[in-house]
Length: 103
Image 1: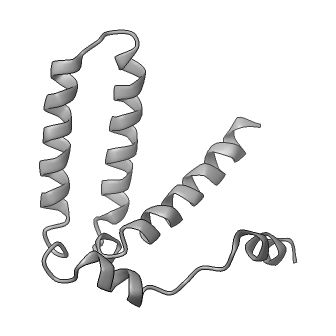
Image 2: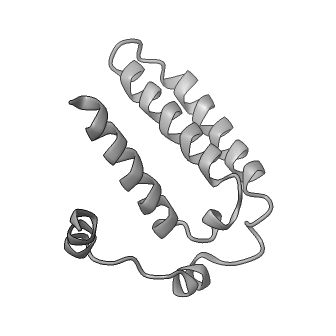
């Protein structure tokens, strides 16, 4: 029961990431960067309540930012986000997607 919900969340997350960051979605590293960010931040959120590793968390966030800049080095200067948003195809509204999925 939980697995389908997680899979649907992962699909929705991937679509949303590409909509919010269409410039970064042009990079082949988008999937790796998405998983790296998701898993690191989830782990940090869980540990914040048990270990209070605020200095470690700050260091990890600094490392993550640097790593993402490195991963997206191929697209960071080639197209600005607003131009990429205008050029990206629009996805259908949620109801239309659900109807299409049922047929």
